[in-house]
Length: 153
Image (cartoon, rainbow, N blue to C red):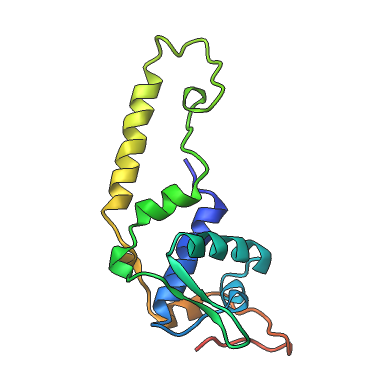
């Protein structure tokens, strides 16, 4: 099983925003930090904002800040929001055509595994996985618009 890049970026975006300690962060800043597309991160930020995990401040000096306290943001909730489905095998998917569905024991086993996975994620909050701002500086440096290394400190 593998989470989508969308879920990965959503978790990273929340961790980065939490590390800012109330300072507004921008999509551009986060995109440089994670070396990902601003367009893709914008979609992630929109989803997190619509769900109340982030709060968007519009305007020239705007940006993003956490919309909730880190200890109230459950990782399992974020993953369920950002993952399209947990259809590990065909019988979990819409339009299942598997000939073994009526007698197969895989669905029960995989259903239990998914429930365990989600239960584990539900035990953790953003507060449990927060990093310090300096932790993000270990990422490979990206060229800034002036051609030099960009320092987010």
